[in-house]
Length: 232
Ligand SMILES: *Cc1c(COP(=O)(O)O)cnc(C)c1O
Image (cartoon, rainbow, N blue to C red):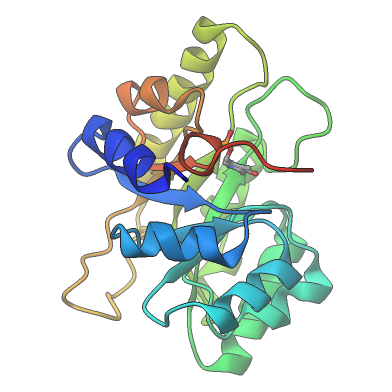
């Protein structure tokens, strides 16, 4: 017996008001996603293009598919027609390609700029300075295949809660700074007037999402705590 719906309900009960839950389903089979869907979950996060394309074809059409992993530029085209949010826009080169594919598909693809806050050298993403430079520049203003929706970050992979908190707080402060920019990169005209486009601050995973929420997260990405450990 699986506990997916129980896990989901338990986590949802701990979410602060206004915080969205992205259920990170990478490496888990379609049946487990279906189970979460049947329990009411509609936002799923995946980190591999092939796997996402396979699952999108197999599962209900009202799922919002989020891409959360490192995205290679040559693979953007496979997810461009349907992806609801790319959390991991981690370079200007990738942003240009997402824009190009969005234009080709006749849509604005929603993206978050991935910030590199963590101490690890290998993590992808913009530093705060690089991100600031991009959003203070003009290039994004003419990108008609992209809708900038906010920022995403991951805390350093360590046991030190105070370190996570410090990094989340830094990301939140930067997010507030970006919200003051004019013209705002995050306030394009809503494509769907029923869904107001609040800027998104995506931060928090299974082990640190309560801390991330305390520090101002508006979207948490939770995998293991819903689906159990991944068999890789
Ligand atoms: C895998 C992953 C998650 C979910 O991690 P869990 O620890 O399983 O909750 C969240 N964000 C990103 C970017 C991931 O790659």
